Image 1 (spheres, rainbow, N blue to C red):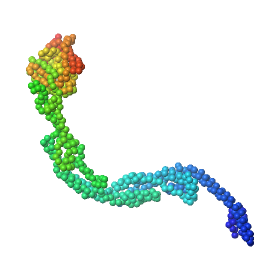
Image 2 (image 1 turned 45 degrees about the horizontal axis):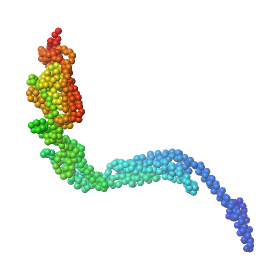
Image 3 (image 1 turned 45 degrees about the vertical axis):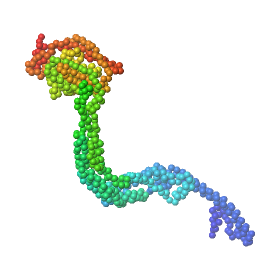
Image 4 (image 1 turned 180 degrees about the vertical axis):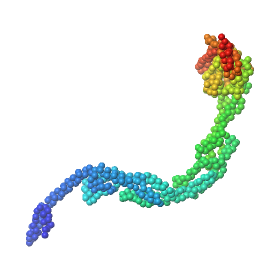
Length: 640
């Protein structure tokens, strides 16, 4: 039988004698034998250390070679989920895991309930596979800085595969939304009690319990499927959903609404009263029943925008009114400006404020509501005439209309009455046409002589230029800046009386339906106060006075200059379609043309001056004949 020593000797390449040969009788012989064994062990130990070193070196070399072999690869026997990525490069591992991820993402979780089936994909429930994190973890195995850890990992590889879970994340918000959609499919959500308004009747719809997804249990099944990488097909976990608002929570609000709908809302304005029926207001009622901050909250209101529109339509016509200015006049006997009648304040309905007050009354104590308005004061307030700033006469114009016919005189009286009392605000432009309005028979005007196309004819309102001429003279003397002025096309001797000469007349023309195309006389009030135009007649004279704020200006009218131009004219025949057959009459005889220039200098209180000239190119004429259409070409104009 071979001894342990023989085996050891064989292992190290030497030999030893059997024990029996080493042991002799006597004490000395035994000591000699023990010394022989110690000597031999002393020789054996270095050899054993050398063998260990050689083995360690071989292991180190083998480990180094192993790491070099897998320098760009995942170490062998590494499995991500159920995917073996050992020995693959990172790119290969990514491609392999991506393929598996695609397969998993095509899979679905199957839930069933009462004949309904849901098979959501991973994306629909907010699940996604984190390939990058999974690959990073697999690559990091065995590559730590600690040598002992690396050696331990090598030992683990010899024992078996190294498993890494496939990293999967779930977006809980997406998953919750999917559960919400399933709850919709189930269609058995709990119903809160609510208030129902039908006309003026208020009832309570009772609460009802419901059935919804048990999200915690369903989530657990989904997560287990990811852990086992096995498909899930299971009954959908559900739970009872309790309503948050009960009928008892709404009883007080029901009573409040019933009281609001019990009677009309009374509204008043200037002694008038109206009832707004509850049946009209209920169309604007909004009731919001909700569970907030741990309790039942009910908000009742009226749609203010729609209600304001309803109230505006129903009451504006009865409430709104424009302010009415007082008519004023200057009375020397009474010491200045007086009101001929009282002014009236205006009113405008405040629809939004009205809606607020009606809503407050309807949902509150149902007290009467005074219609809120905006009071608009008249520009000419009979209780505050001093605000107009009219403190005296600025200028007076006059003209003499003696010798005219009755129709022309009537038009002068009508125009004067329409002009009288015209007020001009500071900075405002006066318009003669605007002051008298459209010249029509309805306004009281009649047909009389006019100048049209450099010929004398007849039309409604003939003679009104007597009044515009008088107004021009007053404005000229008051130093007002003229913004539109037209002299007559022909010189009319009737305007050259009582010291007035040619060049002091103003023509107006209302032709066509567009006032913007009419010929007008205009001036601007450039003072700080209002101006009053006061006009009257004392036959045979027409007067226009301008009262206002005396700002210290002075006016100088220079001597007019006149020139007779060398203009030639021929006899003229005018065909009038409105004349009866056989009509022929001479309306004009030869007149001489004239050019007149009237200079004016206005000196203001601060010393500044304004100079202007008013140029009147009066046309002359030869004989003028007016004929009917059938007499065309038969007047003396055509005699040779």
